[in-house]
Length: 313
Length: 249
Image (cartoon, rainbow over all chains, first blue to last red; front, side):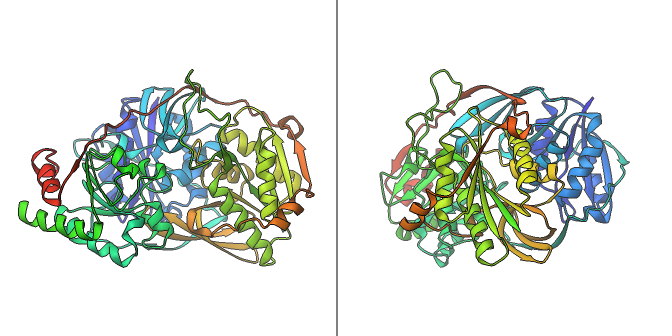
C-alpha cells in the first residue's frame, strides 16, 4: 500500500508547503504518490514527478478542478482513497477546507496539523495554540492528515522520476462554484516560506506606519507579517496575520516590532530559529521568547536598525 | 428559513493553560471558561441574518457537559431565539460532533448552519466541513463576508493568499473567520429575557448517534520551552549580534 499526497498548486507551480507534506509522507512509507488535480496542469504534474521520493503522480486535468473547490476535490479524493493507507494534504486554507470533507465522506476521523510522525498510526499535533502537544493514535483504516509545513524539512524539488498517470475526473458539483479571487500582490517572499520575517503589531499605530518596516524588509529580503491585534485594528489585511488563527511561520529570523506577544501570536512564530523583539514595554511577554530584545520606541529604533543594516551588511 | 448556530464552551482565550499532572489533558477545573470566540462571531452573523429578514429563527446548539447550557444562555442573551443542548460529559471529536449536528439538522431543519472555523482549545477546524459533507451541503469556510440572494449565497473566504469569492447553493454550512463581523454585547434586559428562553435537552442516544472517539489521545505534554535570550542596548549592538553571533543576516 502507499501514501497519497494532495498537491496544492497555484499559477502552474507547486505551493511550497507541499514539499514538506511529501517529506512527512516519506516518514510514513517509502511509496509516496501524488494527486495533481487542476486544469491545464501538465507542468504541475511534471514538477510533481521530479520531487525526490515520489513514485507516481496521478493527474486529473479537467476544468472542474481549475480551482480547488472543496465539494469536487473531496469527492475526487474519496474516489481514489481506497488504494492508500494515508492521504495527506497541507495544513493550509486549501488543505483544511478539503480534507475534513473527504474524511467525513469516508467515515474517518482526520488529524489536523501534525508536526511529527511517531509511527504509521501515531502523530503529534499542537493544541491550545501550541501551548500543549497531543500525541494522537488513529484506529481508522485510512488516515487523513493535514501537515504543519514548518515542522518538516521539505522534500527536494529535483531528483525524483515518478511515473505520470491520468486518473478519472469526478462529476462536476452543482453545490458550489468559484467566482473570483483577490490575491495580495507583493514583490516580497511568501510569508510561510521566507527566510526572514518582519512583523508589526498594535504598537505600529496605523496601517501607514507599516511602511517604516519596508526598508528593513528590503535589505533582508524579508516577508512582512502582523499580529492579530494589528489585523483586528484594520492596519493590514488578514493574510498578514501570524498566529493561532493566522499563519504559522518558522523562519531563520523573526523580527517582532511593537508586538506584545499574546499567546495566540507566539503560537504562530515561536519555532523561528532566532527571534528579535523591539518593544517599549520591557515587561512585554514577547521578550520571554526573544533571543535578542531591544527596549525602545519602535519609531526611533526601526530607522536606526535600518541604518545599521546599511552600515554593517 | 431557520438558522442553526453552534457554540462551544472553551477555556477563556486569556487563560494560560496548565497540563494535567498525569498528562491526560489540559486542566479545566476551576478555570475561567467562555464561548469560543469564533462562535461569538457565528452567533452575531446568525442574528444579522434574522435582522435582515433572511432568517426566521436563530437556534443555538451546544454539545458538551451540563455547563454548556451557560454558553447557550450567553448566545440567547445576545438574541438567539432558543437553544438545544446535547449533553455529553466526555470530549466528542469532530466526526462525532458532525454526526450529532447532522441529526439536529434533520430534527430542526435549518437552511443554514453557522459554526466557528475552529475552537481555540483543540484547534481542529474540521467540524463544519465534516457536517457539510454528511449533509451533502455546500460549505463556505473561513468566511469574511456572506450575502444571500434567493437560493444562492455568495461567500468571501479568507485564504492564505488573500480573498476568494465563491457562490454556494443553499442549504449551506458557513464557518466564520475573524473579520466577518464584530459580535455584540448582551444588554441587561436581554440577559434577563434569555433566562426564560427554552433550551431542549437531548443526548446522543436520543439522536441515535454513536460518538465513541476514533482517535485515542495517548498523552498531552508541555511544548519544549524556549529559553529567553538577552536584552541589547542599541540598534547597532542588535545588528552586530545578528550578523556575528547568530549569523542569520
